[in-house]
Image (cartoon, rainbow, N blue to C red; front, side, top):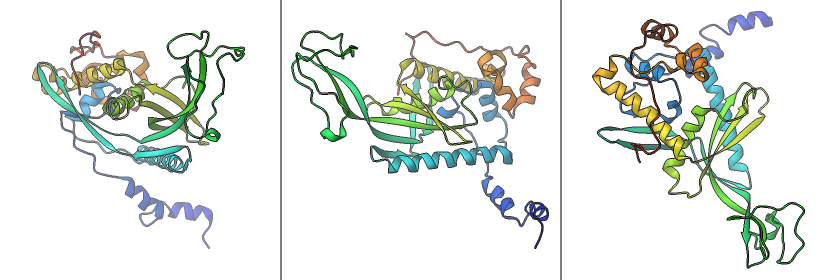
Length: 320
């Protein structure tokens, strides 16, 4: 029987199981075409995205592919758990959506994305009724509502009612309702410095909230961060916000014009990760770093093109 050491050495041979599994992770990089963009990348450095459309597709290394595979496994487990939760209904899983964005005075483009999960959940909300006693939604045993009647002694702490403060005759209601959420699962190494959702993830989930808000009024997003070490979770609610939508469209429209307008393509997109402090980390993980340093300088000092400036709120150029 071979020793443990010889077995580990043998496992790296072409006939080993691990080698065959690693090979199965590899795939041909998809060819990108200007005019089709992805919400998951809208918050990335625009220079990195520019190169991904203008340079030959690059294959990821085994280490990166392994990280992707582990992320997929985490999401698959979360989706399975959601489907088995008695108070959660899984409406859709890994469903694709495409939206066409029209620009004033320019050609439009498409945004194509695939959401992780669309779920309907029971949540408890406060409500106010000035005339009727409390009526809870659903069966009494399913509701965590607090029953009360006009004239009852006020609680020690007032609970704000919808539309204003409490007054004589008001009845504060906590009722169980069902709401729809877009759930986006992100696997992370740790929760250090994760006091708020990452900006690029907020922009990504905003796309799905935008395309689904008419079908599901009041839809909200949930960014669920899962720590790979122990499967602990941290989540953030992300309501739809027009400002986030405008930022997403603004960024993708700048990328689109940089790729399609010859005078802008000559300079390329802004190397944001060199200029924006919060994005500096991106240079360390960029597979276009050497080319970017050559074109723009190690600190962006050689870049002579257009800098990204967010448009005023009253100049919304794009709509679904």
